[in-house]
Image 1 (tube, rainbow, N blue to C red):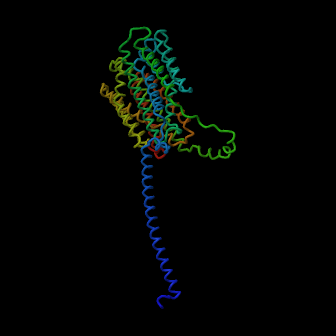
Image 2 (image 1 turned 90 degrees about the vertical axis):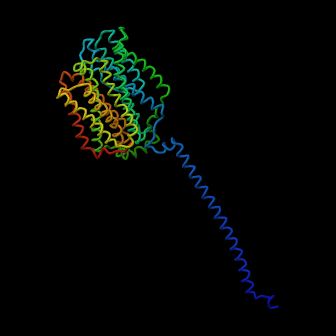
Image 3 (image 1 turned 120 degrees about the vertical axis):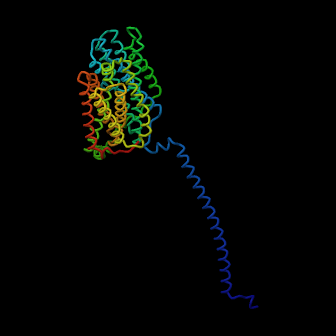
Length: 468
């Protein structure tokens, strides 16, 4: 009886114990289920993250577009810009082999021939530049038939208006809207490869055409470069209009945003203010750009004149000599395209300038010793062609990396003015090199490079920029 009737306290404790045991079992079961679900969720998250990472790596274009420093325009547009630059270089250099003889046939001198190899001015859009270079080549070719000496100069001046595409090519390859800061030196290296193609294929083609002769008053050895390049430009002009995709214009200020822009204008003015160090970089890069094209232009104009007197070279041989130097430097310029991402621009600039300066010093020693041979002159020309072409790859890219994006257009304009001045003065100096004395001719170039070296050393720290 006593066992059948438990005290109330004992019954309550028993019920609580049973209820607690049930709760413990339920809690243990729910914990196991929660642990299982959490593990499944964790595995699913890992798989999802891995998939996203894989997709992000596989889709290289999307990955690159997320980082503005590595962005690039379309390959078709790049082909038009880089290919057009190469053709403009070809048009510029194709007359080098026979320009002096062409001028002399019409009663001019070698100095006059040097003047016809200037770059010209620029102020027109790209399509108008194609028209200008097309018309300029035709006028250049017609000078022989009309027997009018100054038509050579007029033709080159009209072509010079077309050479504004040098400006637009450089501006395109440094435009912050489409080219990241770590891709500008790479694209500038491609432009210099086109430059190397021009001064390699141009003189060679001009020399071959002169060698063939074509005994015709309209199409002959000295006029054929103009006619052939006119046909080439007609075809390239059509290709440009078919595949080139232009960039979007700069955004315009809208009236609805007038008050906002007026409030933020002091910040914008402070942001685009140029410091003294940046002004120093602008001056230094413009000077080095001028130096590179001044020396290259003077040698390209001087070699046909100097080799004709010193070694009895014909325009055909002189053109092949110039082309051989460019051909030997071409692989190194291609190598620079891939290595430009690993070295700072200031290092590339110093290496190229030092190489070209070494070529000038060697030429000075050879002239003093009167030991000019094919081999010795070729070594000098190779060092100068490779060195100053290499140095010219980073003048624009280095300056554009150090300045605000809003200054890209003005910077390109300043550099192109420097190039035009260099092409004109270099061509005149090269044409007059023999008359003024070859020793004096080389000393002028050494002085120009020396002044640039002083500026470079003074701005060494400020010239540090991102690679690529």
